[in-house]
Image 1 (tube, rainbow, N blue to C red):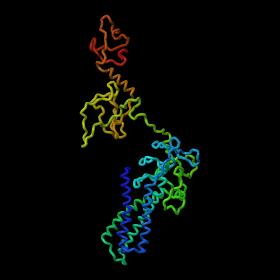
Image 2 (image 1 turned 60 degrees about the vertical axis):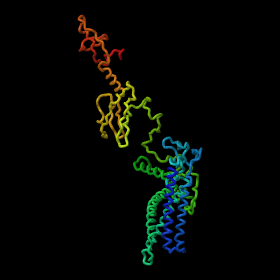
Image 3 (image 1 turned 90 degrees about the horizontal axis):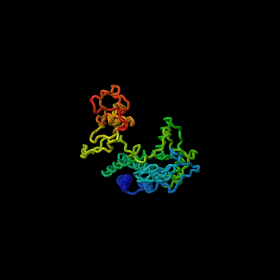
Image 4 (image 1 turned 30 degrees about the vertical axis):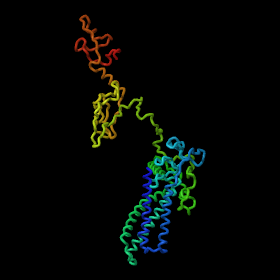
Length: 455
């Protein structure tokens, strides 16, 4: 995210917090108590302001606290009994090719921050920061205080509205007070609904010691288990509710609501399964024989290094502003030499577009080779049907041999002294048909009739 957009998002969140907190006290509660300081007023507003200050303080810590970064030169201890995560394909320790560093367990690379984050949960645009190992506890407390503060706020405003219609209270709210009552409801109700649902998800993840990314991985593993592809796999980081919460908020339950530093370094985690190199998430068995992906040397080469002749643009004309296509004023030039098998005459469209019908193989031309590749128009451009290039070469050579006037064939003069049997034999001893046009006429010959020198 752009730094300016991040600051705008933070300012918007601060406005959502401060507007209900300040206006409900100045324009609703203070006039209700007669604009006089009293014990009842202090008793009502003091807890509310403590909750609001705690909310703002934890939000500030979410923004400024570094979620955790992989130290330079860190390598996994493969001899330790605490375990380490491995790649699903090779079984070796995880390595980030972007950062050129080994990945500790539960760490992931963030594209927004351009680095690997320890125990990455997600990148939060409202804090303009990643939520990771060292600020996830502040994030949980921030959500908790948002829920409690909004609930306290709505309770105060609702009690003021109900007190107005009571039989012991005859002070009707003023116009300004009524407007701010409505605005406070407009601000607080959507926040408590949206953030409340988001808080329930993260509270559930906290009790299961699961991040957002690991939640997606658990859903995928559950789907593979339902389909019978894998056996049940236990999540290796689930230590129980009490220990899961203590790993984030600290060991002392009395300080769970106070800002604290999580225990540990974020590079190692205690496992619930005795596995020295556990494989999480489990891999789909259908991909067990899949070879690692390897990029080619160049994306523009084809087999022997030549350009792939079957890759043709579906429409290479430029599109104008109004949707019309501009016709090129230059003469078309073929990128292939004239002697190439796929050479086409410039300016002649030998690949007209045809409607595509899925699953219908009859759209391909089943006729003999006509000098054009059999294609049909698909949803992503032209689809080329594979052809036998050896057969195409033989047909191409045969077409050139049968071309009229390509070869000058010598035929001997007819002599009366020569018998008919001798006349029908050429100098190689092969029988040939009598020419129809007399001496010196040119005719089409087959491949076997062509002398070796002419071939």
